[in-house]
Length: 311
Image 1 (cartoon, rainbow, N blue to C red):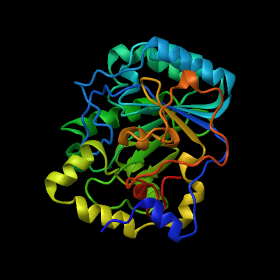
Image 2 (image 1 turned 60 degrees about the horizontal axis):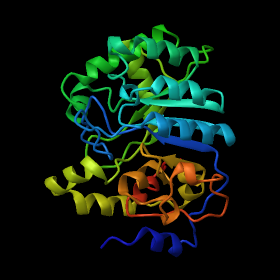
Image 3 (image 1 turned 90 degrees about the vertical axis):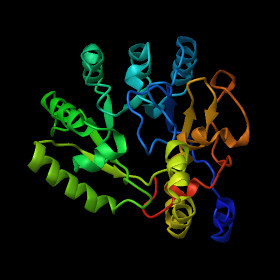
């Protein structure tokens, strides 16, 4: 039987509370050109939830009032959201590091050429989903032909300076397992990825992050249909590492959804668990959450604390 995450924390004499809020994560919508099997948001081409200019204005005003060390723009595929260029320009002046999550394929479309130039000019850090060096494994997770297109986009980004030493253009990759199992050790996986990406495709990048799949959204549906749900949840629980709790991203992060509602993290957003358990929108929040505020939790939190964790 799965033990409630809060009980596991208590058994280790731990509490999940906030430090000072240093990262603003902005989920601009569910629209995506892909429908990846592991997506915790169930993003895809048929989704229509995208951030409006009015909500973007509220987000930019909040960022201007409270400078964040990191602003992390995610989705869906943020590149597909109308007025995304306006949002990126408006945020760039109010953070030390502006990050954009990309699935690579959305960025490579010809109509995104102007957006790419803006991203380069603003020196936006790109965090790209690239689940596997093995094309068959990657395509099984993301769709036929996606791996080849992703490789082509990474090669093009390299030619523009991304991932190259001394360029100031940071390119990080994110890899998730292809099924109901935990990721490999991050340092070992990064070394292997770098060697194989360079050898096979001539690709270079800065860092690799390996994260467990969240038992939410489309991945949760796959777990249920494949009969892996119970085993996977128990595997995550068994891999709970109390040492990860102090470094969890949610402790320093504020997440805002496409409609302006606030959450402790993007996974609580997907689970529908609002900030600290209380429904609130960004235009009604006078200040970022203060240190010591409790963070709302759910069973999916086991994925963030398994092994090396989401730190």
